[in-house]
Length: 282
Image (cartoon, rainbow, N blue to C red; front, side, top):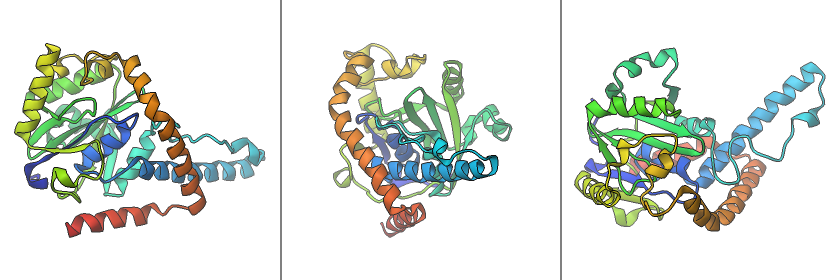
């Protein structure tokens, strides 16, 4: 049975630039454990390993080594969109496994998703998490102003709607961290993280939904990102236009982080051990 985490408080991150993958991983873990630079380091590590495998294959096949080198990362775009492999690797630090919902091993979850603890959803360039906290399910989409409660009955219908709209869904399995490094909103380590009681989250969602005139999760389509945005007055294109003002800095920061990680040979295991130790001390 799931133990109460974080004293019953929900951790939510509101969309910042194109960092939905960061928000997704952190809401799975229910705490601000990863930054975009941490995930960029993971991406760089994966890129290095993939190049090594391809070089070894080139040696066997008689190809030129130069055919397998590229300045572009295969696991993160300069805009901040990370691959599923990066999310998987980041969560592996916490002994969590990410499994596609449509694989044979996931059949029990297809039949009764309520028995799981977390799902990761992806479509195009957007990631978000559906997570069970203290026995209750919530949609932690970073485009929502607060986590949206999902009834156990609606969970299955919600996942089916996402699948029917082309979303890729993954199950997260393992022993989730029970305490995060911070325990109050005043101690949050980033500008987009917030700590909310279930009551506060419900009030914020109701206020947002009433402003839109419809329930956010009742409209699941391929344009889900548009329909779940907190500000209904802005189109997706307008949101992206405003985000581009911040994206230039983000692109430069991620590019620099990738170079630093590659040059320094980032030790991902050490990063994970440090974060775990910090969580235990809190």
